Amino acid sequence: MHIPDGYVDLPIAAVFAVLAGLALAVAARRSEGQLEGGQAPLVGVTAAGIFAAQMLNWPLPIPGGTSAHFVGGAFAGILLGPHLGVLAMSSVVVVQALVFGDGGLTVLGANLFNMAVVEVYVGYAIFRLGRRWHDVGAAFAAGWIAATAGALGVAVQLGASSAFNYELLTVLAIMGGGHALLGVIEGAITAIVYQAVIRSRPDVLPSATREVAA
Amino acid sequence: MTVVDRTLAEISSRVQRLLEAEETPRRDGFLQSVDPAVKIVGLFATIVVTVSLSSWPSQVALLAVVGGLAVASRVSPVELARRVAIVPAASLVIVAPQLVLIPGDPVAGPVTDSGLAYVLTFVLRVTVSVSLLSLLVATTRFADLLDGFRRLGVPALGVSLVAITYRHLQVFFEELSRVVRARRSRTIADRGTGQTWRETGSMLGSFLLRAFERGERVQRNARARGGTTMAAYPSDSDFTRADGVFATMVVTIVLLRGVWLL
Image 1 (tube, one colour):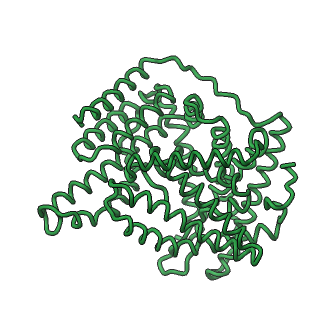
Image 2: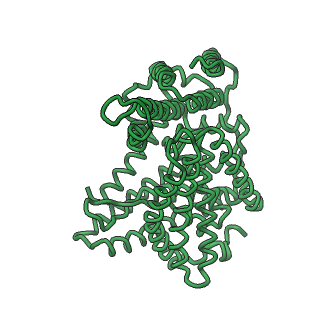
């Protein structure tokens, strides 16, 4: 999902950098100023935990020992709430780029838009809509649809770029179709992890009273 | 290799990169002596020039610049290649069909000259861009990088958030590694995919809860100390000779791009 430099045209990268910047500004503002001296450590440390959790390999029932990884965008939204979730995933994406070279500099805004903004907000919205019927099912749908939505964002950015010489519809079909399948895995992991968390500490969800935020 | 071994290998690889991120910038090299803020702006401008170019000879020229910067910064080209190789290799696989899809004069079988030029340019462009980012990472301590971004006007809140995440990465890598090893030591038979998923889910849930609880503790401690606003790192922002040489090089590249000489 990380787009490296050289794949996306500069004007498109600039547009998505502005969009990501606006979304991050909204997320910071909607966090009601709690971050400065308040919840920044919670968000930063949880982001590091999500980053480490992405290292875990999940076996797939496919010959050859294929495994999958957790991305955690939707889960970050469920655990921290949409705005703090966006900020946490942004921190993950920035560290991935600036420490490990995953993704590029000119496309940092595009990567933030896809993996932090779209995945977290879409994932949280799906969870919020679906949890009144079945919360674990909603977590599954959130992980699945969020991963697919993020991939569609990548597809639009690549398909619209002249540097990447494939038609938009081709890229949308390959990225969208592929991630609609891979997203099932992300959805399953999100649901399983959500279930494990909610059994141990249901109070951590943003809807519950959070003692430390008081 | 089992999934557990694969997880441990990936954690180990990430930890290695974290250690390298602290070690290589200590070498006495050219880019290491350039002010982080100047370096961020300069390398970003060079990447912008790289991304904007669509001819392979100009990319080859920029690759030579990257090689020169690496040698001058005491980052061996082999080390740099090892860091970045996966991205150009994956890019080659992705754009390889264009060798035959783009119309043009055939050069070898169905491969056309236009297709070959496109693929060559694309892979070189990605290689140069990724190498430049890797040089930035390899020659700048993360704390200095954050200081550079702060001086360039990036909001302090964002810088603080990223700093906190970076500071706790090593802790969580070690913790996850311990959890995975402990699970392996308790496992004596293959339990099948379904059971493995349930156990891994439970394990990861506990791990993320511990991360969250650690965050809560750090938050309480920070609040007890009066907040999380971080003081700026003390830095010497005088424009040095190395800054001047680097800035001249970047300006030359930008000017050459501007007059279409590249």
